[in-house]
Structures are given as C-alpha cells and as structure tokens.
Length: 417
Image (cartoon, rainbow, N blue to C red):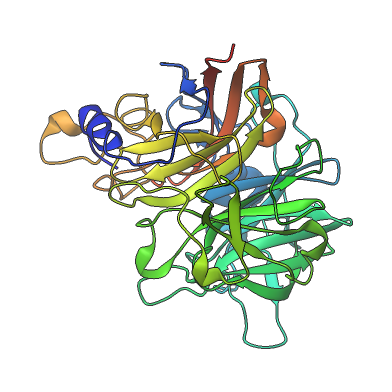
C-alpha cells in the first residue's frame, strides 16, 4: 500500500480482464475527496470535533469497516473490531466486555451526504456502545479481533447479517456465516455457514428488488441476492473475486445457492454450478491482490461498480460491468494513498529517523512508526447521486492509522453521455 503513483500505473497495466464493455467509465481526476471522519472524538486532519464525537457519546475510541444497508426506514452501519475507551462518564468501560465480541453497530437517518453520517450506536446499560453477539446451539461463533460483520440486509422486518469468522493462527478469518436478529442487532441467531472457501470476505446486492433491475440469464428467476467474495486464511488479500447467487426468499435457510463458473464460448451466457469448488474467478489481477470489496448497481451509468483495496496498487481500484459476472472493465485507481491526499493528510505515513518523513501528526499515540492505509471501500448506496452518464458515489473507507472510518466521495463519468 506504499507504492508510488508511477508504480501503481505500472501494476495496473498488467491486469488481465475479459472483453471490455461497449462504453467505459472513468474516475474524474481530482474528484476523490474525504468528506468527514465518522468515528473518534477529533478529526485528526482538520483538528475539529467529529460529527459523532464517539468517545464522549459512546465510550468508543475507533473502529474499522462500516458496511451499510437500509433498515427500518434508515440505514444500519456495521463496524468491525472496535476499540473502547478505558472509562466512560467516569465508569469502567472495559472489564465487563466479552473479548469474544468486540464489534459495534449504529443506525442513522442521514440522507444528505454533505451532513456526514450522524450515528446512533447500539448501547448497553451504561450508555456506552454494545457489541453484537451470535448465539449458536453448537460450536460458539465468535466475533473477536479479525472476526467481523461484513454485509447485511433487511428481510421481512428482520436483520440478516453475513459475518467473517473462524479466525486461524495467522489471525485471518476462514469462513462466512449468516445470522438473523430480531432486536436491531443486539443478538443474532446463527443460521448456517455460507462459505468455508471462496466467500469469506464478501459484499451483497439484490436484483429485481428495491429499484434494482432484473438480470437476464440469471439462474434465479425471482428476486435474487448476489454475493461477491474472496477467500480468507492463507489467501487473505491475495486472491481474485468470485460470484454466487441465491433466491432472496431463501436467505433464511441458504438453499438454492449457485456459483458462477464461467461464460459459454458459443452463446456468451453465464454458467452456474451447485458446487462452490467450481466457482471461477471473475477476473485476474497480476498478482492477485484483492482483499475487501464494495459493490453497487449504479443506475446513472447503467453499470455495476466494484471497489477494492489492492496492496500492490497503493490504494483502492475500481472496475465496472454490465452484469454481475462481467465482463469487468480494466482496473483504474479511484484512490491512491500518495497522490489523492491520503498520506500526510488523514492517513498516517510512518515516521523514520529522518525528520523529513514527519509529514503529519494524525497517528494514533505510540503508532508513529506504522503506516496507515485505505481498505474496505464500501458503498453508501442511499447517497449515490447523478444524472445520465455521470455519478457521484459515496463510500466508507478504513484508514488503519489512525484507526478510524472516513466517508469518501468520487465522481465518475461514462462516455455514453
């Protein structure tokens, strides 16, 4: 994540993809901006209080991730590993916390992206943030460090969430599971393991529902839930993406999942299998670098957009496609840590013995020698704006050092205009 811009362009030129779509989408140069810092007490870059002042209001120092989905007339935000303050309003804020569960969930009614995202965290008896818990009749499903909620959806007034869990000895998650909550995310009942292989880190989207178009050649003829994912474990942040689809109505029981295996060379139609082991890569980066991703259907440019952090490209990449399976466009940089105002602004660049390297003061205390980053770019779909052939997208991004989540925006134009 610390390559220079020139190296980034060199890496991008090696990416191999399927045949390009009929028209292309381009990130407008200079359009990628940080809107605001979502959590923490002080915006480290700007030196002003954050909108949510999470230390004062919730005893919450910082967190990662920030996957969003619409729920109960507003929007739910799923945060990963969350760091509590030692005390909250003069009370102990640590000893009662279960180390097996350390994530956080918030809700917002914010609809105007210029207002940042005003969060109302799920809280416990002391008023400090509370962590969601997964209940299982069998082996416990934990949400320790590096075990996190990654995507969610509202269905029949319940909250269904995909979790990456099963942390191994390398501190990487190894599987994804599905849980359901009927109390706004405080407690989840384990339903089933979605994937022990290729869909550990994932994002979801629907078709034929909530304003999204139906998809021709889909094996699901009704409302569908599409899942894009990457493996964990030894392949964490070293893989290419995969695709699965299931009837939305089957989300509670996990039946009817189909996995994309490629495209018929004669008809051009996608092929799907019942076996996850048959799932084929959607495209190939060289070297494979994908870790976490975001996905959305954008009606203003009539394309699926995918964002993902790539460690060899120095930031976040974007691809577009007319169908969930592709063909996916060549990768282009949407946020470069060095050239787009990341490092030395709101993301810390590690200090060295050379005083010239001390380009910022945004580091978490004691982590001045640790580089920050830009990872897990997740769309905030209700914020998407645009008109025919152009769009402004909003997405959350985790910065690692400082350990916060920020709201970002970028403008994209299509040559169909």
